[in-house]
Length: 510
Image (cartoon, rainbow, N blue to C red):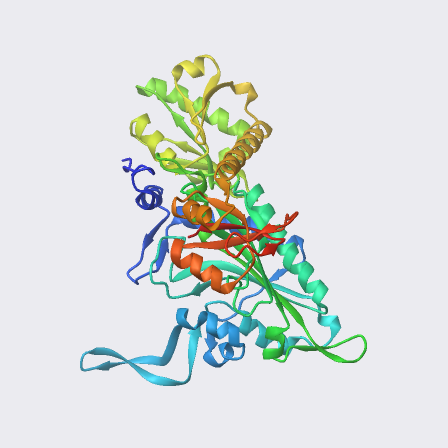
């Protein structure tokens, strides 16, 4: 049965959770602040992982895996790093359990406490110091897909949880220039991925000193604007300079036979991208997924009143699927799913996307709600009259449009054309929302009013200052989300009146 969803205008946070529940993406676990990612939600993460992983490997990176436990002494080696993460760390102090008078008790105190990784710069630094001997070992371009843990006071599924999934790239280079180029290259990868795959427009730029990653020289980011006009940081890329190299004695013998410290970077995206997908595209009926992300690209819903009509309509549905997915794939799916009510046919093995034939014994309207709330981009509706005309109805989840097509039009190329069309339309709509909700402020009063009224991105001239940023955050909850790369001219800071050449975007953020 369909799940009732709270309208966005009534209660946006409740709407967000309702969409997740209705689409069966995730649930809270018995451990406070942690989540269980259900199969539908994990399929989205797999789609994100597949596409990003391909992009990483195209740029020369390879995958590895590092332990989840990090000696506490490692964090202490880089002062800014330990200060930035100390309050978020989960600590392991014992190595076992024993029965006590009141039940199980910790036993075997560890000689050194271990941190459940909040991030892995220190562990990579330690290992890179063992592996890198010469300039011939550089650049070292590794990425890992892993989980991390950071204690959070207030949690929300996908957006902010104590444990979450992510990827973290860590690279080492000969020169400062190479490290900077790598940092910006990976930021471009994130930006292209967000636009092309997630249909989420993002703004590239630099973080202020007070917002940068602990231990970084420079942090770059991609920032997105959600439907409720709050900002969401969609990915970060950090130039770490030689901070971690010096902390872990990561040296290499150069071409001049001199020992030098490596220049390093790190960059990451996480499961909060699933939250970004929900809040960028979905509506009051439930989840809406961009076609390139959706594990189920289309659902074929046969409509009939009796067994005679059923046989006729289902046979036509199979013809349609054979045309868009291929007869061999359909035959394999029918053999594999024989007797099942849902027959899943791959239309793209590399992307692992499928078209599902819905043969469940339930009313058509219930099937429609089922696929609608799960964000399936396309629904093929076929009744006896459609079969007589050798046609079908294609309903697009994105805008609810219904169009009639002749069976002869249905091909794999036609379906990919629909994917491209809807993908672009979703990106255009999200971009229009961002542009309509980006305002300018020429004074501190205007800035405060815009942030308090949740106007979205507030653009203004601003001279960077930790003290001023802290004051603004305290008074409005707003922060500098990004200093965009595109800059021209100069103006007076909205707070201090000092001349500055930087315009920034403020917003209240997740």
